[in-house]
Image (cartoon, rainbow, N blue to C red; front, top):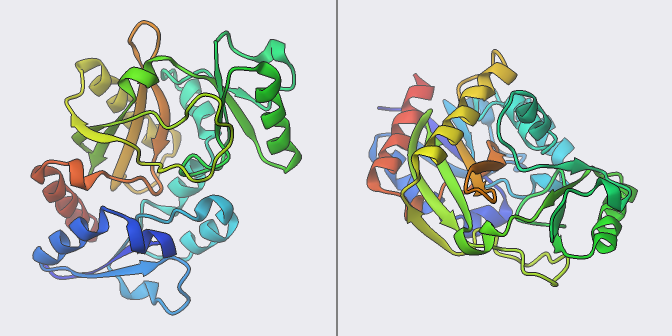
Length: 287
């Protein structure tokens, strides 16, 4: 198949994204011309591509308005600009809760201890964030609320969630879908250490290994994926999705994050069939 594809990244992503050295050669082997480009490079002719695939645009979190304005100008973008606008602010979790999906309990902008969910520890993070930036784990309610107050004073939306003890043992399970099909699952080790406060130097990918998901995890992830076109009718089909699950006290899967914008696809941990499915999904989007 012929065609021109842009794999769209950021300055840092072009240097360190482990997916790009796998995805680009696979697409080229399928006969596609592939460029690795920065989303904010003014020299790029976006209209010259048959498809622009948003990948490691990891700086969107502090340049969101600029990033979304750019996305709205790209004629053949996946995932689509409307999806990016919805997904880049984690307040979209409210929509998923409204759709009846099992989501980690979340309190938005709490101001007093009585609003905190019953837990031994809590996680506080801004609703627009990537790579665990401005995120911390707290055992002291006053410290958690002080973190919330710092975020809201800066004009940001703060989200507070119970820290689920299962994360320390089982980690998070990332469920990867390419072209609408489940392809692989990866365990992500815990990132937030108790007592460390806010740090900006965490490796957001953490300790990674391929895992076989349970039937309950597959069912939960598929339900989240199926809800997206209902919540955003008329948008182009998803080229990729990553659904991060954690377990509650009874072992039931809960949605922690729905990543439709710039998720690592964990291609180094993926089976060969996943890379082939990514190529097939790109080819289908071009057609």
